[in-house]
Length: 256
Picture 1 (cartoon, helix red, strand yellow):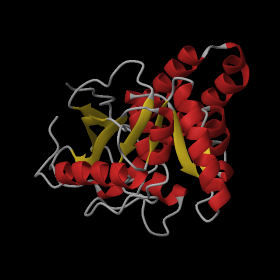
Picture 2: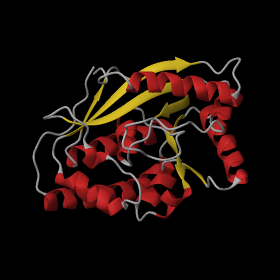
Picture 3: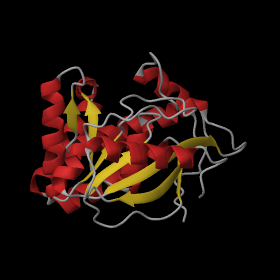
Picture 4: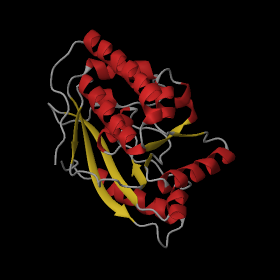
C-alpha cells in the first residue's frame, strides 16, 4: 500500500510562502471552525492539513498498509524528527504526547494545543503522572494517542530505550498498542535522508531550512503489530514494544 504526496519541484521561497500560508490557514481553522466541529471532523481536517503541508515540503509518505479506521489506543513509534508528527497525522490523525517546550514554539505550539496534544515536563514526576492520566482519558474518548517513548529524536542508527511510564495508560484504558516503524530515505538513492533528522542542538528553523533545501525526502512507515496490554506491566509492555520495533528497524529496509 502506498501513499504519495507531492511531486512538483519548488524553489525555497515558494515553499516558505506555502508553509506560511498553510500555517495561517491552520490557525484560522482551529480558531473559527474547530469549536463547532465534532471530533471526527476535526481529525479529518488535521489529516488534510498535514498532508497538504507535506506536499508543500515535497515529502512523500509511503506505508505498507492503511491504518485501522477509528483506532483508539496507544500508537508507539521510533522518533526521528518533528516531521514525524506531520507524517503520522497524515496517516492516522489523533492526539500526540509532546515535550512541554513544543507549547512555546511560534504558531506550532498554538496548533498543537488545538489538536489535543498532551504536553509533558519529563523532569517532573507530577507531570509524568498527569501525562498517563490524560493519555488514558484521551484513549477512552476514542483518540489514537501517538507517543515516542525514546523521549528524544535520533538519526535512526539505533533505537533508544523506551520510557515505560506512558505504557501504563494503555493498561489503564485496556487499550491496544499499535506499533509503527519510521524511516526517512532519499528516494533517488535509497540511503538515509539526513536532512529530515532533527537531532542534538539543532533548532527548528535550522531543521526546516534543511528540509526545504531537499526535494527527495521519502518517509517510510511500517504499520506493524498491535499488542494487547492484557497481562502486562508497563515495563514488560514497553520491553515487548521496543523489541519488535527494533527487530523491524534492523532489517535492511522497511517494506513498502
